Image 1: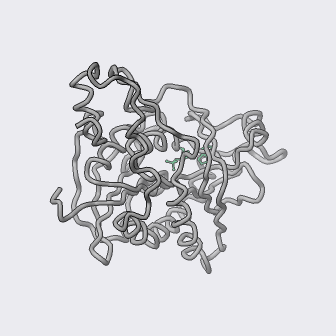
Image 2: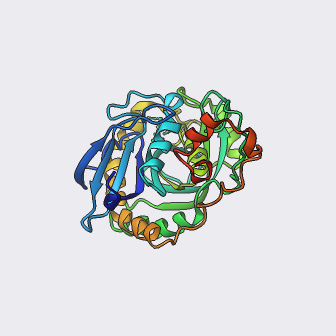
Image 3: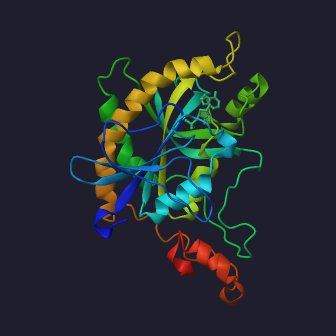
Length: 302
Ligand SMILES: CSC[C@H]1O[C@H](OP(=O)(O)O)[C@H](O)[C@@H]1O
Ligand SMILES: Nc1ncnc2[nH]cnc12
């Protein structure tokens, strides 16, 4: 990328959100990272101010990639490599709470990981270098605080008046099958508020790459916990998904400029630098190959 054209903000679209066609198209980047190729070419678009935004479609533009197979490491590495410092990701989720109605928006602040250990969830495995990231607060709280009122602004006055819920817990399951009624009930008892199949490993990898990461969820269904109601089907999800995606596009349009400005002004200083002391392996035994690979995403291995 031309250094005058730095892209500070990335956006990852989930089910139903395969492009941001309300922004001005600039170009598509076909990037190969040390962890393979991203889910889709990266679309670079321009905001009216000229600020550039990078967009990746998590499941591919035609939704060909299952949640388990999303190349999370390539997606995050590619975004970091072109300069992205903050990611606003979107996800379609099931609701585990009566008050989170289909059509509502949710920005979670916590995650319960129910994936099965079959996803590549770290850049630091099998390389001879041991690194532990901190993940107690899995999202960037500063980014959430910045975005939440902007999301509310966009949703205000919209048809159906979707609500925005914050401070919630998202359960991430493996899929692709939806949960059983027993699992859905158990997640509620655990304190889960919404459920999806994609926030892990995306959030972990963003943290390892020192990228501020926030998730904007659109609720599509009540999963399988409601007694006397049919459990969720894809048909039901898709029905709500289309309106949700339209709103998600407006939401993205309504907040990306402020996120860009916050990054450019150094206002999101929570995550940058968090990996500086995360490596426990003595430097003199770190394999050269591994250091080269990691330098693709972090300056400490240069
Ligand atoms: C299409 S229903 C299940 C699917 O939808 C969500 O995808 P995304 O998070 O990418 O919007 C959920 O996580 C599942 O992958
Ligand atoms: N009920 C559900 N479970 C998991 N992922 C979902 N995405 C949308 N609805 C979902």
